[in-house]
Image (cartoon, rainbow over all chains, first blue to last red):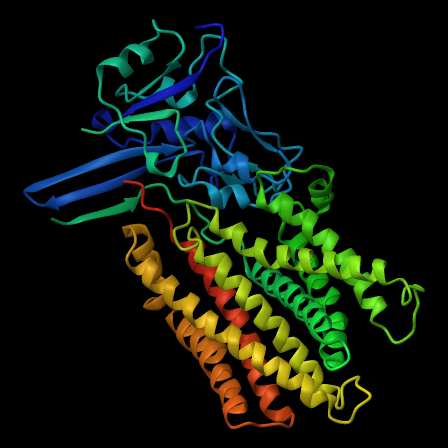
Length: 183
Length: 314
């Protein structure tokens, strides 16, 4: 880990089998009700039998470097941390839902009990204790690699240098911190 | 090759901004439009169009206040609405807008009072102060009418909203709605506020000319919007299809295009080209009601369809 970490994730969709363990781990870690999701798996089907394929794409907050949700927030509740994580100060959130509508990844949800908006935080409470976000630690097929892009010796930096990755919705000028390997 | 997508884990809500936001955009449009028209008429000829000036001034403060109540209750945490006015986030159109509508409300109330027959604020002799109020009222009402469209058009995630034509459409529509509200008041208040017996006819003629011009521009803006979206990205084309051919098509074509543009345009054209000199309240009433209906429906369609359609990412 570098002195100024820049947290990022690589998601290798070619390894994802759609088991939803990450979704369950996320629910558990963030103590979410069953009606609220911080991550989800989008499923695509291609072709017709026997020339047929499916692709699972885990989708969650992309922790954009140019996050639309932070720009639109009228109270400053949504903010970008120095380590790259996009976070919500729930004390300042009035629940206007502008950020939800601004997010191309549909990553934000309203908390039904208290009315604030919340979302994936890369399990910010766990970082710095050598712990991984819950979805990363639980994945049985090694889809997710998490780490510090500012540390050239981290696993994610090495992987980013050797594999071709794409940022989803790059054209929208969001500059995501999640990179996908799409086979 | 077939290619379809299933969402394995559903995001359970699709509509986050409901009819309260539609009502707010509509009411803010009426207020801003009535104020712009009133101040413009005052600038052109305050004696001749006194009924337009007064009706606009008497309308302006109230729809937006009702809309702001709706706006607060659309928040998930309405008791925290005051946080909007403890900060200024210049990048957030909503934050800038919250300040603009607060200032607008204040100035529109002052403008309302100085247009009452009695000189409550003792300002009638102070021309400089009155002109400052009028100028700031004009600027603020222009900002209100513009920001409601910019609020939507700056979101790249929503292809139906993310076009510069949305603020243009909503701006023109706001002034038409303000005119229609003034026109309705003149139908109810027979004779207007003028001293001269035919003052209502002058005011009505002014409204008809402005209405005709704006409806012409609104129809052009709508056409440009439809052609531009129809020739844009896959996201935009599929979002537009929901409006023009999907579940919103009846609202859009009959509610907005027919009731909100074509019929009021024909009514205004009839009055202009048949040289109707006298105010016909029944015709104005029908035309203005349809224009307002169209103004509400187009905002409803844009708000709802815009949320149901998303930018296609991959």
